[in-house]
Image (cartoon, rainbow, N blue to C red):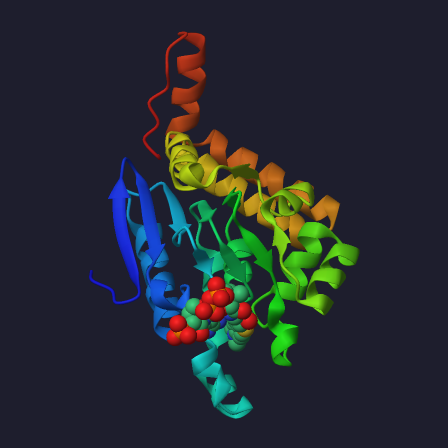
Length: 257
Ligand code: DAK
């Protein structure tokens, strides 16, 4: 599959998607979002892929939605484009997605980062929701996911001032998992993805879903969801292999069955 706005590679069970509009800091236009989500869904179906990394380049993960596309469009045109539908499909991807973020992750770029499951940031990352400076507000989860991630006070400050925060501050607030030197952000993300790709795929996907549910469900319902996932995994081949390998003091060979 060839794309205009992203590049794609697969190595050792890790799918790597690189946002590729460097001249305009990977601004997220409709075509890029369509390509990105189509490829995420393709990788989700591809048994060769067990974990996914999304990255940009050193200067920008993504500096937001493409303002050129939004500047002249009417509210009705934007509503008819149904841009939200494509964004919503990211959270339905069952395999884990790691964002490798350097430079600007602003607006839609921050929202895309927050749609991923794990974030590895370079020391140069600048993360924020500057929509207010354009007279609008976030439209792809900025007020909702940011508030859940950093709490209402910090979210309010970031959303109302539009000021980005540094990678270190993002780490202190739990918005990113790890901050590493700029030379290492992508290799660290791929290394982590390769480690996850070695884990039993059914358990990986079940755990991802259960953690997602923790954001939405009351505790007792989340606990029931978790327990049912646990019972289901007991029926898998990989459970037999995992427990047998432990008893035989050898490394397990997980097949995804
Ligand atoms: N869109 C289009 N072009 C952009 C861009 C963007 N978001 N960000 C940067 N560029 C372009 C610049 O115009 C410039 O193009 P040329 O002038 O070279 O042609 C080039 O990238 C390099 O940018 P700068 O020259 O400005 O570079 P600097 O290093 O000086 O500044 C900057 C970098 C990131 C601070 C600055 O470029 C900037 O402030 N960019 C805009 C950031 C921003 O406001 N982002 C939020 C956009 S609103 C929705 C889903 C999502 C959204 C909305 C709806 N639905 C599902 C409905 C999201 C909305 C947003 O993200």
